[in-house]
Image (tube, rainbow, N blue to C red; front, side, top):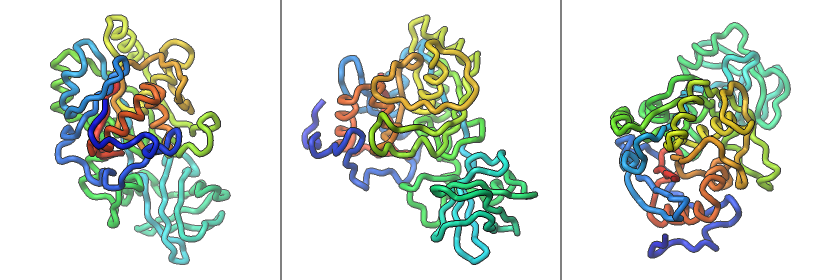
Length: 350
């Protein structure tokens, strides 16, 4: 589908996963209404692209389809502290239940093993082991880490959302899906953020069913592909697909309905659970990297946002819809001034 003034492919794409995005198209704020975003509908069978609003998903899907949601919840994983020397330290805790707590740290000068980080309320942590690539373990001693996060933790907005004063009260609510249940993610499954309770009820009234899985999103999801796609390795993320979820999805597909994954993290959860050839229950870590050539076994349609250049997420969408079709879709999105990334618009791939 071509639009007047569409960008030229040879200038838009600079590499297999790299494209040119005008900075003003990076959404800095959520829409006033969660469901107020735009929706690009991409038809894989016919190779077509059309433009709609997100509530139109109710008519784009069919009675008997099953929407699969990732019900992970973003926890306030970011802490701001200081070294004993006074230098500022930004900390992203990855698994607050572990001891020592794995973390990503940012400072003007590197931290050393044994160095202390002080947090408000006379609470501190000690660097446990070497700091490698900005990562280390933190020993909080007798400090209640979960209470510390409750008291002073911030929602870890991605760096392309600029908040000089830190996340707002609105971010704490909106950088989260309305169906989030299980704490564990340091980034939101953003495709699901377009759904309101009212829209979910409307879909249900049209005999569209729902099932939840869980994949706790870690920083590895957003680690860019450097070098060849073939050589990239994903970090492990915890994933939970229950036997009940498997049974419901299988029953839907036997009846001719579609399994509609909301977000790339849901796709990774389902495809990890189907890695043995058939969809089955799965509890444990997954490091599955989905790239072109992947045989999809558990997903028939996908709702997703527009992703960063060079990202594993864009690679997954290209694997699902076809590289050339997604290239055309992204070119159309820029031409039509769609909003990109976490607080941006959505795409439905059928």
